[in-house]
Length: 249
Image (cartoon, rainbow, N blue to C red; front, side, top):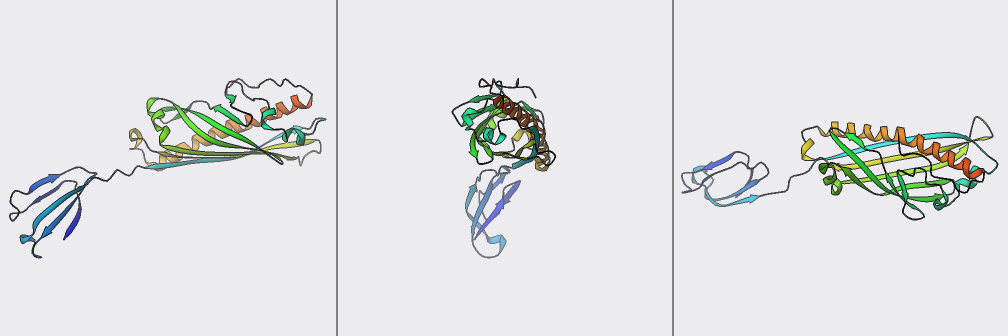
């Protein structure tokens, strides 16, 4: 016969088991006891005790946010459609202090430092820009975290995905205007660090999702405004198209 019992504060002692009396208090350990004998408890004799040290199940939190934003621009002599069909290599680097080009379609983006509970987090994103018939799609390839040692230690303990579809359409208000559209979704799954494990998972997910939503509320409109400025520079024949922005939010 075998019994699987939790080992928290377990104490076993039997007059029929000479020399067997031991307590186990490790909360993450289970003890499997095997007995031989009759069905009478008084006659059971322990044959084998096996400790099962299963790894702790780590709590994971899922954070998510999405935002659809539009930006109205007046179309110049050169159509916005032509600008939106440009390969990614011909777009201006929109924020010289926070974005660097890795190759023709890949960029490294240094996001502003974020406060998450008592920790400061600085995400570094690697993204790829793929052209589409009506614009482009920006996808997250990888993300690493900078900040305090505890934050850096989480780099192997989370996954992130982000898709930003940028398109354009005619404005319903004026035939001479166009609308730039950004439809962004970001999701993060992370292992809850021991230092904040006393905080309920729901609170971590709620606060983290609010942080992501605030980032999108600030960065997406700014991104579209800079894209509109770059289009105007391109439409006027400015081939230099110097990087825009200072890296500040």
